[in-house]
Amino acid sequence: MLLNVGSGGTEVCTALVQGGPWLPARVGEISGPCLGVAADFPELTIILAHPSVPWQDEAIAIATHKANVFIDLSGWSPKYFPPQLVHAAGRMLKHKVLFGSDYPLITPDRWLADFSQLDLPADVRPLILKDNAARVLGL
Image (cartoon, rainbow, N blue to C red; front, side):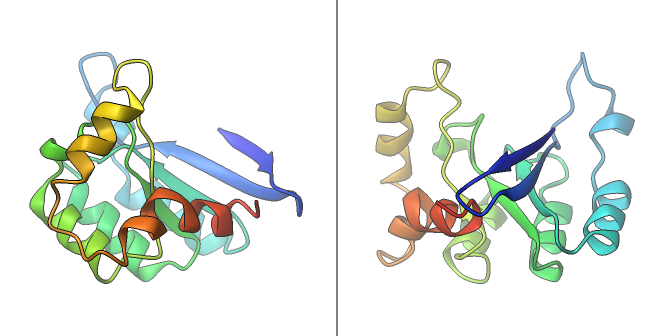
């Protein structure tokens, strides 16, 4: 999905990276296609939507390597986030991870309550909850 958002008309591509019975793993795989798009279009902001089990390590690697790739946290309760995602979000990717609740399936209140239980540095929480999205989306 390609969106034009923010006051500066930032172009954002959201990529679904989680497969399921309705989405074969080949379609959900991200490393090849996403890495290539990020490299070929460095001006395009790419947001990898949902913690991407079983491709979480690939998503972390791509977001670490490519300045234009970010990860949103929608679709899962934070209590189910893979440990490597929590670790990366609190450290090397603290400026590249964005809040998302997947409302109405996960209410913001529930998501925030579960998020408060994660082992994250206090200074990272406002980045994930607001500041990163405002910067990335030009809001």
